[in-house]
Image 1 (spheres, rainbow, N blue to C red):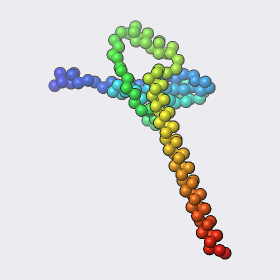
Image 2 (cartoon, rainbow, N blue to C red; image 1 turned 30 degrees about the horizontal axis):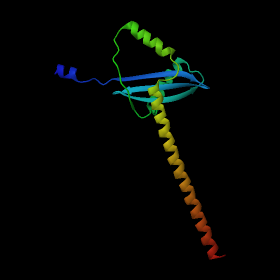
Image 3 (cartoon, helix red, strand yellow; image 1 turned 60 degrees about the vertical axis):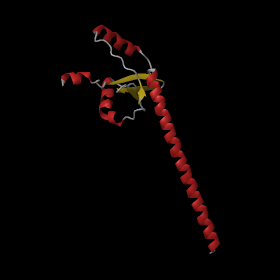
Length: 147
């Protein structure tokens, strides 16, 4: 039984939050890697958030976040060397902006939102045209009846 459990591929889930300044606001990018697929969500903070404010935001609003459609990403297993981990952490804190996979996922989210907005606008436009047509028909009937 134990050998069977060892042979099963463990699902790897990772999450990270990068906060950076994107003129004129501070922005946070949530990256979530589940089963080798990356999803991203962008949040605008406004003024520079304190650490406790970011933590409070994550605790209160994490389940309300709308993540982008998942993008396939390859995950690598990094050795458990403490010096290497420190080096990687330093590199991540020095980085500005977001990775290209994250940018792709955000672009997918933007396109999805754009399509939804277009559909909503089209429905509103058709509803308005229908309303105007029915109003015109009603006026026409009133004119035929006479006073």
